[in-house]
Length: 120
Image (cartoon, rainbow, N blue to C red; front, side, top):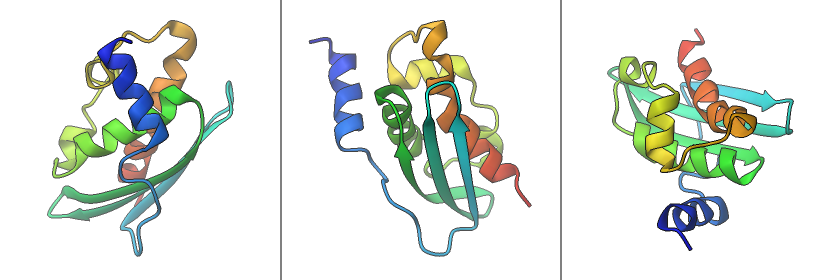
């Protein structure tokens, strides 16, 4: 099995940072209506930096694995850096090229995080 596919399966079966945080500074729920993915994210932000992140999801392998990897990636990053993350960055993080049909599955974790950051 391809090493990237193994990594994706590992993050899907045992997602990192899974579970809600107590007293988050920011929270958001995002839904991908095309395939039914639902992601809820909680963030703790100190000095404009994400110090803790947690999530819960009901979704496909791509969205869950991407969220797990992305939560690892954004820890200790400044919010302005997180707001600049794009599709190419996500494909580097997950390690595969995602087909156009699955692009929304890849993007919903990032959208959920960026929307949480943008909330007042």
